[in-house]
Each structure stands twice: as structure tokens, then as C-alpha cells.
Image (cartoon, rainbow over all chains, first blue to last red; front, side):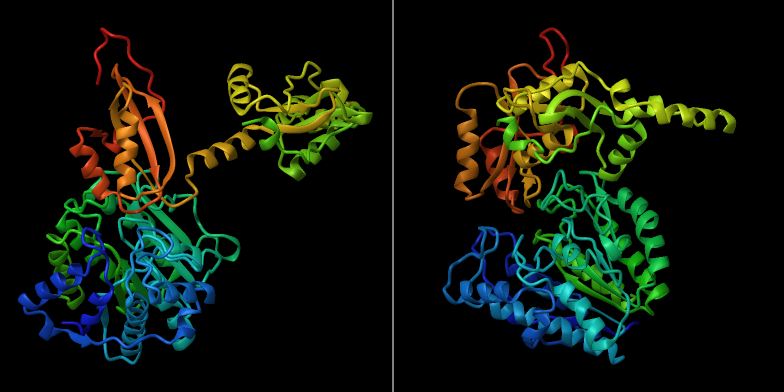
Amino acid sequence: MRRTGFLYDERFSNHCTSPGHPEHSDRLTFAYRALEEAGLLAQLTLIQATPARLKWIERVHSPRHIFRFEEACMLELGEFDHPDNQICKDSYDIALLAVGGILKTIDLLMEGQLDNAFCAVRPPGHHAEANRALGFCYFNNVAIAAKYLQEQWGIQRVGIVDFDAHHGNGTQQVFIGDPTVFYYSIHEHPSFSFPGTGREFERGIDEGYGFTLNSPVLPGQGDEAYQELLPRDLVPAFASFKPEVILLSAGFDAHADDDMSSINLSTEGYSWIMQSLVELADEHANGRLISILEGGYSLKRLPELIKNHVEILLGK
Amino acid sequence: MFIDKSMTRDVLTIDPETNIAEASALMRQHHIRHLPVTEQDRRLVGIVTDRDIRSAMPSVLSSEEAVAKETERIAQIKVKDIMTRNVVAISPMNTLEDALLLMQRTKVGAFPVLDQQHRLIGIISVRDLMRAFINVLGIEEPGTLLCILADDKVGQMKRIVDAITEERIPFGSILVARYWEEGKRAVFPYLLTGNVARVKAKLEGLGFTLLNPMQWSLDQLPKKSGESSG
């Protein structure tokens, strides 16, 4: 079995959204309970979060964005820039805690204490742009993680795989001109889904051209589309890029029972995807894989999907 | 939606006495396909397209000797020899709809825009119209498109808009398209949100049908009664 880290902190639930908002704290507490009931916690290295230093947030976000977010929380405005982005007094601190926990997880992995890890964080991050909160995201967790791997640990090439049902516009924006971070996303076709980016022809710009790759999936196409597109698009791209560490933006909202997309993936389909990604990390990155939670809103399905995800990381 | 708000003002022109090789180079350099031909005072006398020029060039299949001879011949050809003199031009006070329909009718990809004294003040091309319609659709802002099937009768739009407004969701745009089933309309609201699950359930609760995305079309003509639908 592998040494798998599990980042979870009860304080992640202190980022409050209103009842009825899909990005709700029950997502995490339900998932945690599922891992507990399955007896998996004892097999994981449990990681507690500590707040990130601002200098790491500033590697991706403008000081103005950070300040405005902090201020909106302090003033208890209830939302930040858009009704989708609900906040409470603690949201800023919790967002810092989520990033800090991920950076701590990276340290443990790079020190050789872990083989891989799952970070069960809130709020999610992949829609957050340098200067804008979007789609329930405030700080771009995975983008900050990639910068940290490069600057703190000297990693040259970071591969990001985003399998949330929605395109990670924020992550793509951060690395659009960067040939050292490969951003791959598979998601519901942008003509049918938020946020409307991630078309096949978005391949990066300038020096970063060819280091962004998008595989849009048409509504309802489910498992078969992923089984066709991942080997066709991602596998050869990473074979030539050779990432040293792979980061996942793990979204579970493409499941058939999740009403945030129409992709129609099955539970088994999710397991197949994760198994393929673990194999990809073994092949190129010495198994080094850090999975960071993005979406996934079906309280009925998410706990089971996360349990399966963690079991695959453990190599069970 | 007047042409003068969407046209390209900084328009490259060419003199009728210019050699076509020079015109060709100019088009390549600036990635354009249409060059208005003007005399002094920007008075329009014709238009030359990349296609006009290509048809005047030697075939790639010709022998080397033939090409050499042709090159000499081409050096003599001037823009005025191949340009279209009978230009379809448009006024700045025509509308985008005029331009769209005129393009469909004439199969021309760009219209010079002339003021009342017939002087060239701009050009409107497919590219300019696309930009305007991308803006109208709002698709460069993050959002989610829905397709709602509604009865073609007064008051349906209000019910849809009210339901969406109650959820505090901002609109990017709303398109209403003809639908193949008689008495129905396909309504496409582009909603500036990533959170549409609740509003979708609400609309269904109000009796609207949310069309399966794989059946969406902006281009369905209504079937006449008697034809089977579906």
C-alpha cells in the first residue's frame, strides 16, 4: 500500500454559504464520515491545515484581489462580486487555511514522507482568476500549489489534470503563457456548461503554446467519452511533457447523479479515470500525485466517490 | 445597431494604378482579403479581393518556362484591370441587420462604407459582424446557456424571466428561436452563473420543458402542419 496523505480540517466547514447553495460544508463532513466508516482514516497520514503565507497567494493573485476578498469578508457582505460567490466572516481565513494545508501536503510529499495525497479542501479554486473570484472559488489552490512546487522545491515541470465537470478557466489563465506548467482539462463542452471556456482550440499562447490542452465532452457522453479522450489527448501530451509531479483538480460533479452537469459519468467511470491517472503518475512522476478537491455536489454520491478515489490513491 | 459603430475605420486602400503583386503582398502582410480601390479624396472606384488576385496569377501546375513568361505578364497587370467596379457599398446609417441580410443575398464578405459624398470612411466585414454578435451573445463572459421550450403565446417570457430573476441570476443575453414544433419557441437564456441546478428545477416545476442539449439548434425552421414533428 502507498503512503497517502489526507488533508482535512474541521475548520474548512467554517466557510459558510447559504442553505440551498450547492457548495455547502456538508460536502466535506459527509465525505469525511464515509472515509471514517470505511475504516480508511487509520490507513492515511492525516494532515492538519495551517494558514498559507500571503507571499504564496500573491504568486497567483493580485494584492488588490486579496485585499478586496479580505475586506468583503470583514464587512460580512455575504457575497463577493457575484451572487454565486457566497462568503461569511471567516471565508478569507478558511481560504488561506485551504491553501496552507495544500502547501504543507506538498512539503510532506517532497520530503519523502508521502507517496501521494488527497486534499479535501473548501473553498474550491480552479475558477479563481488572478483578479477575480468566480464559480465559488476565491484563491486558485491548484495554481498556487504549482508555483510552490516550482519555487520552493525546484520542480521544473508540473502537470495539472483537471477532471471537474467544468473548465478550470482560472488555472488555464494563470499558466496560459507558461511552458513549465502543463494544464490539461476534460470537462463538459463550454457551449453547454459554465464558465464557457476550454474549447479545443485553446492551446496556450506565446511560449506556452502547446502546454494547455482541453478535451470538451458533449452532454450525456459519459464514461465512453473519457475512455476515448484521455488516451487520445492526455496520455501522449504527458509522455512528451514528462511532468515531475502531477496535481489534480478533482471534481466529482460529472457524475450522473450530480445536477451541476449533464456529462453522465458513472461511479465506475470515475474509478477508471483515477486508476489511469495513478498509472500516469507512476510512469512519469515517480507516483507523485496530489489531488485537490474542486466540485462535486451530490451529497448522495460525493462521499462514495471520494472514498473510491482515496482507495485508489492508497493502491487498494 | 448602426454600421458606423461596428465598422473598421482604419481601412487600408490601394490606388487603381498599383501592380497586383503589390496588392497581394499588402493583403498578406495585413491578413485581409478585401482592398477598396480609391482615387484622390478617398473616392471609391472599385474593390479587389484576394480571390481576384489569385485568379490572375499563374497556375501552380504550369511549367517553369510558362511561369517565367506569366510573371512578366503579371508585372504589367494593374489593380484597375482586375478590380470589381460595380461595388456593393453600404452607408454608415445602415444597420448590422442590413449587412447580415445583404451578405447572405450577395455572398460578398465585406462592404465598403461610404459617406454621402461617396468617400470611403470604413469597411464592414464578416469579422466585424462576428465580433458584434459574440458581444450580443455575451459568450465571452462566464455563464451557462439553457434551452427552454415555451408555448408561443403572450406572457411566457415574463414567467421565465421572473423565475430566473427570483434566483438573483444576472442575464448575459436571451435568444428566442423558432422551433420545429408548431406553437412552440425555443428560448435560450445565457445566465451569468455557474449555479443553474435550482433554477432549472424551478422552471420545470412551472411546467416548462428543458430541452436536452443534444437537441439544441438555433437553425430549425418550423414545420408546416401536417408534417410529423420529431
